[in-house]
Length: 560
Image 1 (cartoon, one colour):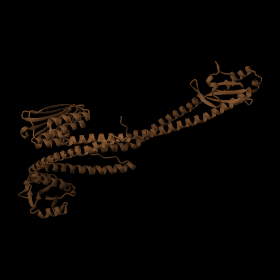
Image 2 (cartoon, rainbow, N blue to C red):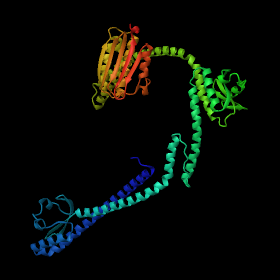
Image 3 (cartoon, helix red, strand yellow):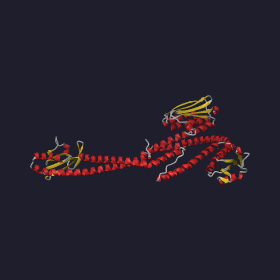
Image 4 (tube, helix red, strand yellow):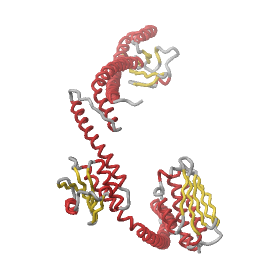
């Protein structure tokens, strides 16, 4: 259940008061216990001294019956009485209050002691009788009554705290609900305002009234801005045309209709594009001067009934009619229309740029693979040999530090070899695609703990370019399995079907929605570009909770 603001405030105060009261009560209980313990020690010291003085004559007369009777009387005198006994000059027990004799372990505890007896804490003190010449008296008092008294005080304090908290919560809740009612209404109104509804906020005669008036002003501004945004969105929806003439007609027709203009033109690159509906009756005539002025100043310019909106860097939108008081909407059109014009200009260059991009990407990937191979060889030959020499040099050095350095060097060498394999496996160049993939899959399974089922069925060799594509696709797809799928198993297949090289990598993991994610995520964009450069296709099949399957189809025309 979600708490409102009043509930949260009350809960905060309640927790703070409870914590403070609890700490005070527990602290008071601890203080009372400490003071009670001091009083108990004083009582046991005074009691044993009184008992020693009381028994002096009887012990001198060796009247053991009187001694026992007085010890029994001491039990009634102290509510926390545990025991009392008298030892003679030779340490023999003269009298005691135990039903079956004084325990031997107790006789060894001399002087002032605090210990457990039959599960209860006992405070013991002793006093000599007649200077110790006729014996020693020992008295023990239980701690239990002290705890009982402290417990009563603490319980009383807690009950009082709970009663005070309950009363405070009730009164506080009533006051908070009444004080925060306008604020709750404002919160509900803000939510309705966010949904696009018209709202009037309360204006109580206090500090919240200032907030209510400010919210009402904001609501009026939001309503006006909302109308402008709706029109702006409609204009932006019409600005997706890639031809300048179509773009001008769509945008100008909408602005003339919605803002009560009479006519409009688009001036771009020194030429005028008319709105089709007013090409023969346009009252604007020459618009170059007004358009150039708006473009040079970078702001909306009004001259009589003419209005020009700059569309940098190529043109301006010129409208005729009654200009609106607020030109903020028209100013906001400048950026999107500029983008739309630029899109139209770039559209004609797109295919050529795409062809050039593909050539550059192919050259870049080729250079990347060559550079990876060079770096991999240097890592394997130079860095690997240096680390191997370092390990051999550390073999004869004694000490734990040398062993730690040697282990670090071995780990670094393994990482360097793995990095070289990821960059460009030498086995791909020397033994071919199948051997390289089997080795990578094996080491991937060892490194990640995934169980990988690998199958390879290609009856012919592939060109080095196509082999590189197949290897990188498998490498990236398995990396995605380890990073994103959460699966413990994966399957990899490379085979020839219907004149195509087909690659599939699938897992039993959590999956995802391809429409929501797209091929530009989870490392798929690199695979797609590599595949498309050799004329292939990448297919992705996945759904939440149903695993993922990446399938690639490559034409065999690029095979050697």
